[in-house]
Length: 326
Image (tube, rainbow, N blue to C red; front, side, top):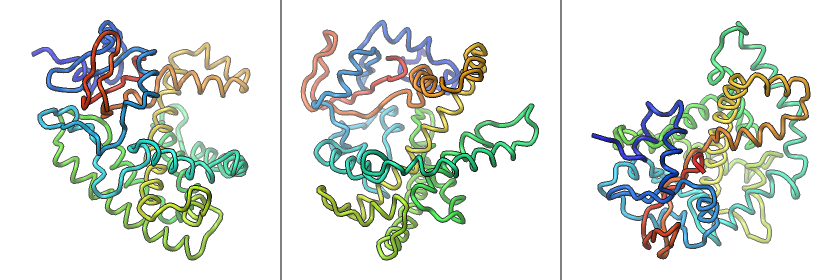
């Protein structure tokens, strides 16, 4: 049986090089999977839909996933924690995003990241020193994964003795977000719920402690903030802290790993970077485009009929945006 385009994209056999599939998919910019979602794969259409108020990210508006293994495997299980602001629409999304941005960086906290420069350099140096044989090592296990998780924990103010527990929870939850049409959704859901429950219980205790004895970390600022948008509830703070931990590190792991692989495949670019480190910022921007750590955005819902390239996507339809194709 011939696999549908979306099944081909999600097939682990194609993960190493999905781009030929994307090229074929772009011949039909709006593809409708039989009894499944609408898949959009071209740049201008994706860009437009990402900013279209008729597209909902709110899980409460999700179309029925009954009988659609693709949607079922991709749907984020948030039963143990409330949905993060990524899964909400304005105005709730905008309020929580503003409140999260304030302690994260400019303009309200301009020195948050820059003030960590020495600590970040120390973490990087320690990881590199621990690699051992420089001729052969596991980039993911020995650098790409531990670096961002450690940084997120330091930003949030997680005690260092608890960082290993966070590594385990983050790994389990992040793995559950990866669409897997051939996996057992029941088992994946149970494993994810257990990890979310443990993470939620831990964070709840930490939030209570930070409200009583705030420090200089982000979690303390979020827990005690009383600005123009009010204060976050405990449940909102739980979901936001979990989002920063999981989404904040997962994309960086993928970017560092795919970026290193891409540079090794393009040694001329790597030599230019070595000769001129000022190229680091534009190279990171280009790597985000060339090998995006987030390949697709699943599970959006149309709130009205929308015409895209001559195809009418009906109200209530499930929509997938293939960012890497665009």
